[in-house]
Image (cartoon, rainbow, N blue to C red):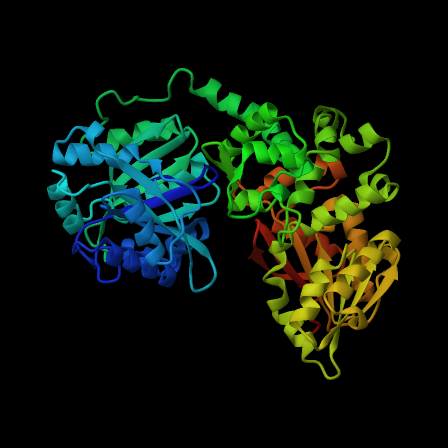
Length: 597
């Protein structure tokens, strides 16, 4: 019952029979129970499930949980006579398993203990076929399968488990697991009546599990809550086990193992290897030689990509550990993560892999120089800033623009901002000015969403040509104008001005100057929308913290807190009205000129 590393999972094991949950069907028809689970996943989300699981959540607690948790999957235990029958049942319910079944030692051992059976005689596997919810979010049905051949003495086990559904659970993901957050979740669950109930550390997956008994007042019909945290958190586990009614299980560690710090540091030190493995995967064209969803023989893949078979096998084994591919004997298959490295995938992140494994990787090797002197490592290594360096090399300039576009999923909610809708409703239509708009990806999305808007994009000459291509491909060539220039050339008389991932490139003085150029160009009614990552005010884990180091090392800029941006805007004569979250840990800041009495 685990999720891929990089996420934290809270799961609840069912008792009783909630009318809408996986326990609603308790008869021998596993296919019917699968359909119930699929329907459950499609219809529910985080906001509807948490109040049922933890009745009495107050507003701050609810908002804290919904900020960190996302409903991921529903699970159940089924009892097919063989794997072929299981696959047929899944297919009949519209479920397709992307990976072969894996052994589930956790459920096997729980069944063995519950029914006093020899664990070696229980064949338990796990599959996680995906399900699209009503809002388009990809979730899963986690299927545990205990093989029960005809005439097997396991039939009583199956009958008991179908009735009591001990292994059914719901899962919520926490996207940024870190010790402070885990402790906070434990405290919050205890505050709502959940009781610590054991746990453990799995060195094979490098994951920590904390169990709770759900509050007696739970309306979801689930009695067991599991907190799964990728990483070695045995210090937290030790305290959790001490609070469990049964205390630490026999043989359980009472605290961090003596080699835990060394293991943790070693995993951190090999992070650079992962970056280069992903970059090599992209440079060699491995994802593009693997059709999405279809397994490929490793020898065939080596032939297609002109790579050394044994060396390729070694790389693929590491990529499988990273979750980029899955191994099926001598064949490999791209995962959803790996598919993002294909060049033809919408929102492809291949350019980012090439950039982070290329020029920016080299300059990160001089991070100590930046910390020692304050000089940007990129400038120190290449002899000029990255803007000038890339401008001299058309291929690098194109790669940089495409790498910026690779994170455009953070733009998805931007066109729905009320300021853009108001501009589109102006008589004769409004104008949106995208300042340093790159290849025009964000402006194209805005113009597509609002046919009543026109666009003007300000950029350097080579980037303007890329933006022209973007607009032409989107069918927007006749609705967008272009201006080649610098920040001093911000066009006047727009209704909405966009600054997307611009300010974090610069120090405070330069940011104030850029904002003043915008303010001078803005009519009194105009709005300014800024897309940036915000450093958390409470010091919690965030991509912005990592990007702050990246900006310092490679660009000479920085990430900032919301109040820091408010001060910069105020110095330019603008008020920060609000900031709202965007995907990929970004935020949309809304500013205007102060309202005059």
